[in-house]
Amino acid sequence: MPDRLIYTNSAGREIEMSTASQFFVNISKDVSGMSDVKTTIYTSTVVDADGEIETGFHVEDRSIVISGRIKDTSADNREELIREMQEVFSPFYAGILRHEGSEIREIDVRPETAPKITSSAGKRWAEFSLTLLAANPSWRASAEKEKTILTGGTTIYYEGSRACGMEIEITVAATVGTPEVAQFVPSAACSSSGDCIVTLNGTGFNVALDSGVQTSAELVATAIRAASYAGWTTGGTGTTVTFTSTTVGNKTDATYSAGSTGATGTMTTTVQGDVTADMDSFTLTNGSTVETITFRTGGGVYLASGDVLLLNISQTGITITLNDVNALERVDFTNTVFPQLYPGNNSISWNAHGDEADFTVKVRYTPLYLGK
Image 1 (spheres, one colour):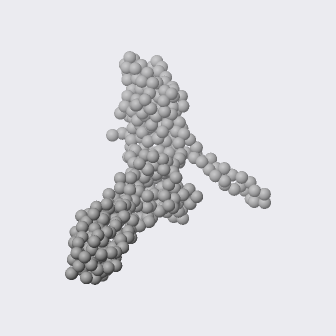
Image 2 (image 1 turned 60 degrees about the vertical axis):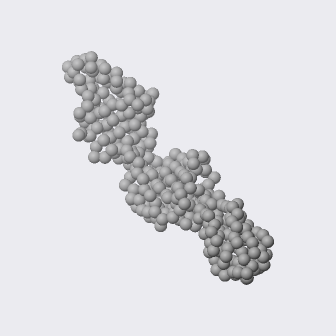
Image 3 (image 1 turned 90 degrees about the horizontal axis):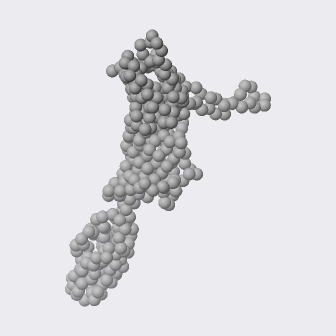
């Protein structure tokens, strides 16, 4: 299949231009401006310094000039095709120009003027010419790419010819979080047979004690440790009994009642359960360039199961959302440089407070090119 250009305007109408189309265009001969760009360099002069000092630059917009012929010998059909071209390439609509060749690339454009179409006696086909202006001169790949950033870092080879932004998606595992842990230490033996009560997350569990058996604090601890508690596991040694929740998350503080047994003791919460994971930073390194997003300490990226944090970084701006709600306050802007992907190898890593395996980090990007 020959190379072809497909223009689609913002109203959804499109025209194909190629050697196989009724809008006949030989892309290698009849189109200019697809690959060449111009850079404006800004300079200033300094007293006692030779020449000038470069202070900045920018790549100028791109004009793509297309010439071709309307390939139909029927006068009625030709007029219909002329009307179609004038409507689709109306300057009132912006559009996307898509080049399909060995690679597929796209660029945002707008017609500078309506197409100029000439049809003269003696010529078999009507001829046309038009100019499309690309305010942003970069072509982009037609498909977005996605990489998962592994714990310890991942290298992305970026094949584009100019830096591009990215979307960073941060989520956490369904099991993320910390289970609650309580600790009980008895201080007296059982002096009267009966039940003591261990209450875990609001549920009371009766434990039978015998004054003839649990004759020391350690034996009281052994009896309590050996009992069953739905949703909890027990541990510890000697006079210490631990209760660990089998699920993550904050629980109601555990309590203990000796009842009439006389087996007094102290129950404390030693680990407060939670259902969040805490991201610290995200860093991109390309050669000597190091750019880091630092999340705000004490309220940065605390994510629970099901949360989705999205950071969209582009040349025109930055958006940060948590579950589709603005979350710019999550970033420490003083210590942040928002990263871009640069041509070549980009090493990307991230750090978390606690278990990094809790997080899944993905990067999505669309390569940008200065040539088609």
